[in-house]
Image (cartoon, rainbow over all chains, first blue to last red; front, side, top):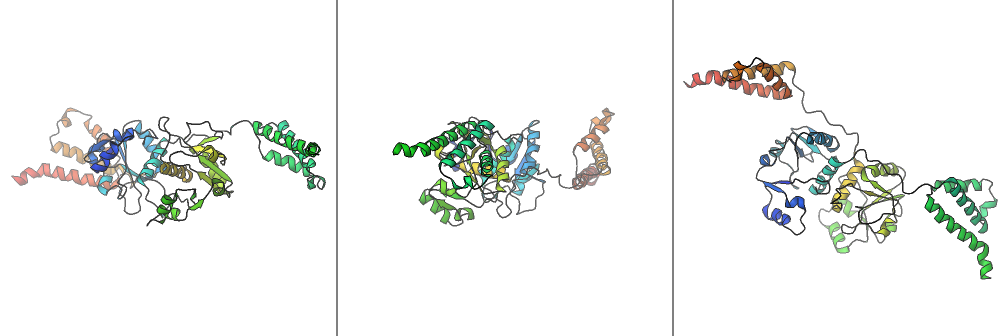
Length: 218
Length: 218
């Protein structure tokens, strides 16, 4: 809840020992410290003008209309502008009772695999709140850095060919189109400016070593 | 993982006692039973052609490009058609190390509140896998049942007016526009067929009781 900016946790008839223990623990999240306790669900949602229940469905006939999370979230977001909305979760073990559901305007579910429908409560809450705060317009960021210009890329092609020649790479002399294949390979690497310089330095050092290394040693 | 249909869990260098205990527990999830152990991250991702790391960011300068989950998920979905992809999560406490991240092609984060960035590991995994399986085209379902026809709605208006008259409701005689206000009120209820009949029956019973009840008692 705190991750996604939801502040108001209301707990209906919690198991005293566990609830008071958790809320008074050192480092308890502020959401939990501020949680309000209610004896009944009716009191907990009294000031809410929209009450949406969550369910894993499957085991009972629902009297309510049921929305998939992706479709329900925009309805909730639209409502919040006009009045408070409660998102209702049942117990980990049993979910919401039919009586609980009768306090809801409609129900919502997370689309899960048919063979594994029920979710861990904490994960279900996280997924629902994520969807409510999700930004459908978030765009992929361009990759870091700038793509190397053609001249830089061509310097690498040339230095790589020189390195291959210095290493007596056999295919250099057997194929006319080899230079073209190397040029295309280097372009497929989609090098960025810094990386192009980095690679060029490595290749130049290898060329130097292959041409002069043996002389220096000898 | 199992909820969203992800089958392949790979664990790098886990704490033996906890991992083997969890996997051999009665009722352990199939995903955990089938989990593969690796000594190093390099071995764990060896067959993957895309490795995406997850991070809560904030505490260090990232060398990688960083995508928000909403924007990164489509890139992953597109990649999966051409080859296996690993989604990498660090430990609950420390996240991924810089060394771990150097095995990644890029990084992804869940947009959380600035003041509470780090998420529970299980919740972060659930949110990421939900986003990967999310259906952006899921549409809100129409409400259950069919909306009551005007004739039905008008029968309710008439019976409600009759009930008000029978109850000596004071405003009935003071305002010419009262009937119109009641008609509009009933239409704002957006009654469905079954509910319209249900309400009509209640109102008719009340009208009957108000007209004949006292006579019957007396």
